[in-house]
Length: 237
Image: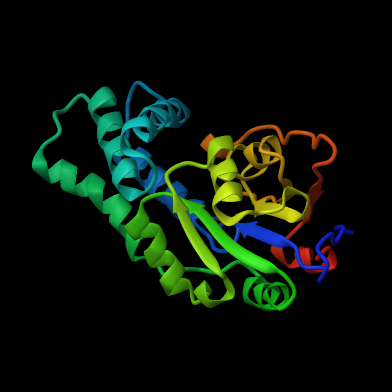
């Protein structure tokens, strides 16, 4: 059980959004599958095309950040690297169409999320911490219907150790009773632990491959919990 160290027993929970509160990566995976099928490369296998796309996405993050704009850029760059035919305006629009399907998809909440947030918000301090393009992420937050459960919504460009330390400083968060909750070892769990916070890992079967990392061990006094689903937080908080 989580130790409640504040006088009123309340913890501060920093909660991730994409693939923690609602589905996200499955839509990108479908778009990627459609793109690879559309490319229909005769020399490279689908696995090789995907490996190239992963490499391009790592490069795009540096210059374009996260989100649909960066994703479209990555698809276009991958096409230009691998395709025999030139990228015509018509082909460009077709590729952009794969991403537009994602943008138009309604927010699909994961099982038990609203009820769990209701339970947690009555007992603890909740902050939504998500990374990506501001307009995209804020739009999803609004459409999700979950915004009122959170005292604060923070949309950041990256989730690294410096980001978590900045949040601790900005909101004067006590590290011993602050937890980062999320599905990504790379962005949610490992940097939060490295910043001296506690963390709760909520695995998702379709976490983006670029977010994969081995989950770090918590070094005392930090603590790490692993729950099977978001609803499992009620057992600890």
